[in-house]
Length: 134
Length: 134
Length: 134
Length: 134
Image (cartoon, rainbow over the protein chains, first blue to last red):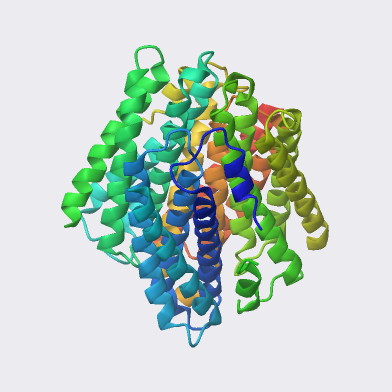
């Protein structure tokens, strides 16, 4: 269990969406960011790195975008539906592209298999939250 | 002069848009990120910080989103129009919200005046790049 | 359970330290970064924000430094003991300063209590890893 | 000219060191972060990427550490000499390692030549600031 939910529960302002769902979304985004950072480096260390350069670049993009999204969702002092939705949209797009690329190497590289799942699950979380924020 | 253009010119892959324009966009995003980080801290140090909490939170969001966008635009190995456009859209939205909030305090706080301009200019850069990427 | 350990186990290169310990350290750093980001925003939303500005600034520093440290520890392709140790040293210093400041408000603000604990635990993790990396 | 100096001049609190020097340091750190991000991607796009994996990983570390350092130096509300010095120490170490690795490929890859210079100059800036902060 992470402390994300405790932090939401002790925040003086209520978030715009259900706290349990929001905490799960933030955790999923942070986990996906970490997994993509690790997958980029694991790909870099493979003998056939030349086949994985697109995967590495998509991993790096996905990590940065997931992180910025998690941080934004952790701030409730200036919640702004338009920023949240557009950022979640961008994040879902980045997660899907990364999931698809990782899935192509999933049978040869276990780290890509784990990462593809993290990205797919994170994409779903982003899309669900967009609906919840409407 | 930054080295952003030199780095684009020595990259083995051509970017999808004109290099001079892309380098200017990356520089504008990095400058806006830095300005928003500095403005958040300057607001925090003001006596009337209680009036500036929304401004601080929008500054922090804008800084993180500009940075993630600049990094993504610096990667050409896996250029993906859908990710670029949606991220630029989110970034323009965050810049506009931050510019509007900063503009409200621009007469009392010089740092907010400088930041409002950086955000407005960065929003324009993002919107122009969305058109160029189509 | 996070996927951090799975990612370490499927990485083609062995890390310089025990994987279970390293995975726990990365998870602790990411959790501390998230907690500090959330605590900064919770402080910002408190009525007496003027008393919490030092806490907010230390939270923001700690979040950025923990994140950069977690990312560095997730990369094994160019492991460099000197960088790892000095970065862990900086991170432990930032965590201690943030823990001490948060502890001062822990009785009035639950989010500061949770954050003080996350920072203290993360400081310990960093110091243990410095010893293990020698 | 960046707006970093204007932001320092309009900040309600004076920084611990000379503003012109501090603004130059922040600009140098941000420029080095951007250059390293770009160099990592340029290396990734080279045919002989397999020879550049150590360079890429050091670039990614250096970019993250420079960025966290620039952000910390942009916050004066909770200036803490111990955090600043240890972070600048870590940053100088990361910049030196990256400069040395990039210098090895500088004759074949122009982006590594530009990046080696940015890292060397940033290392110097960090070391000078450590002295000034004493």
